[in-house]
Image (cartoon, rainbow, N blue to C red; front, side, top):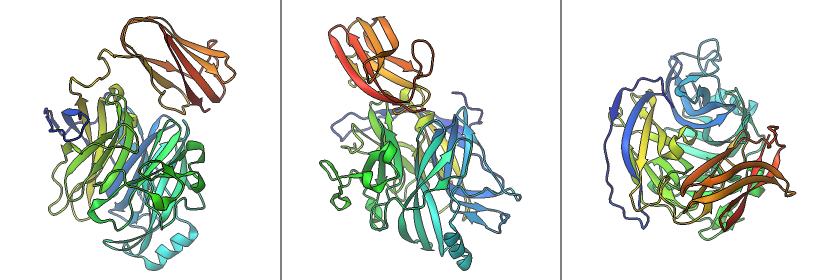
Length: 453
């Protein structure tokens, strides 16, 4: 991927870290500042920056967005906005604006919410809808999770619950579900990611102080808008009772973005700790952990005096080389009510004692396809410890062969194959559950994937 954004500066360093966790940590081998995420000239400040791919475009979502002029409706800020970008140039954004050139809200208020905000006319006594995570449902829609708050002062926020909304391809305005998903008495479950057909939501409890313990809930993707479908991690298993929750890690103050990284062969969480300009990452073999000690990815540019950077977020849809290179944004305050989102490119290496793509495997394996569910294409990885005659094929649930992906001798190593959702005749396969099977020597195993049209 080549970016057409000019870089303000480039830093390339090799970092060696002392590992206190039982598992070896990756090493950061290069850091490149890619510059500022663009915005309309009327915008002086907006944070957040959660993203996903919808309709072949990067959907960006932001929190409080402040203007240098009044919007057409008289507003001086929005509690959320959204924009679109080409994946090849993710810092160049386009978005819907009003006649004064100010962005439109991403999640419009209800009549009752708007009436309350109009009655106070105050930035410190208002209803705010802050987007905290989103996942692609399919190629044309994305599901957004947002927290509803009553802002009662500069540092006085009352949590009202978590809601959901849906964005469609090409739109920067979402449609909100009428009911909240989680209540004010539950954690703020909004930090979302999708893995193997399950939506995982991380969230903290308001008033937890600097500890910011993160709890975890999950539900099947097709039931992610239903509260009854969620189960909560209790430290040993997935529990129906949210009161039995157990923290999965602590120390996250701002952001929190989770993804599976194929290069690192682990889940990763990226976040900004409190009162710091650092952006950290942890790794884990499963979404619920155990999570490693924090690894410093980079230190952001110096912010305005007396302030700190925040909202360190990874953007997994932009990752390169199976996640060896990731892209992380963060918010940098530049003044009292002004700031900028900056994007940083981070590249890893692994200690030689850790198996990584390209290293000779010690056993046969077939990994879960990704993405799953998928719409246009999905990638299947497999490993061979020795040269083998390989047959990799797709079957429907009736056991009928749909597509032969591989039928040849492959050398020892790590391999990938892509299924584009078509059968051997080149015709689109219907939506549904499929099985993919590998035969390599005496190794034989099958996994499941889901095609969604």
